[in-house]
Length: 347
Ligand code: SAH
Image (cartoon, rainbow, N blue to C red; front, side, top):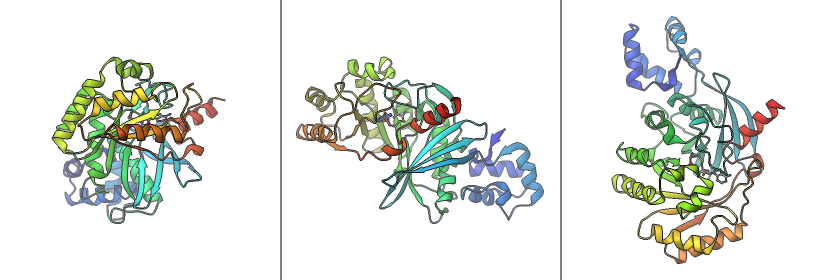
């Protein structure tokens, strides 16, 4: 069965016409689904039509089954999918609104050594409507609707590699940005990738305005290979070239993520190589002290060391800052909460 939230307004219009319903019903359905409602909760649609749709489509693809709030106000959600799979999301509260971190896959097959999402490999891709529904259910929970949106920003930084689920992720971006729906600005959406070069190039040509964030985490291929298997496939040079193409096509400044890991990528020599690599390219480097994951044996750095690394990069002419670490007390890092839940279930 397909998920009804996967459908664009045009697709819903075609569906309505094929079922001998007036085209305007599509807009009524689309608007209401984007408020986080299920078909039964839509009052201006004939009951018989709703029943007909429910035979063919799933209309509640995601249910929040657990919520945790951290000391800093960060909230973590555990969602159940219609097939019983579990994914997670993190909600960050800022002065301007809320940022929701969404998952794009159940699990992940990229195998990064520091990441909890990839511990059990890839289970499956999420459909565009399943990614969208994470935003819709949380926006509704917070009391938002399409006009007074509570969620203003989205980061595709939950579990999964967004560019490994390319078509569904691009469709999600268009759905979540639809004027008749929740209409979150593309400029407020960040897509984070471990660096799938062909897909970055393809994305550059989609005529989108999303912020591209690349998880670099190392200044050389040699170091990168130790922590990210994808480095065996694409070199840092290829990644930086693809980032430049993205910048040239979209005008959007690319962000490089760099998780500082003790003894791996935190030396002054690393900062120097990084500066040579990115000199003259208007990118920003987001430093984050590694969030230690108990299943992994990599160690983090102190915040003081992170600030020192940032200062070194700045002195070398780069734009760099240390990101706030949030939600550490609630297993805020990728995949940590899901990993814990799976562990509890198997215990
Ligand atoms: N697959 C995508 C997006 C998911 S992860 C990617 O690789 O970018 C979102 C970000 O969190 C990435 O930068 C990822 O490298 C980082 N990350 C994952 N585990 C982490 C950890 N334990 N500590 C710090 N950052 C981590």
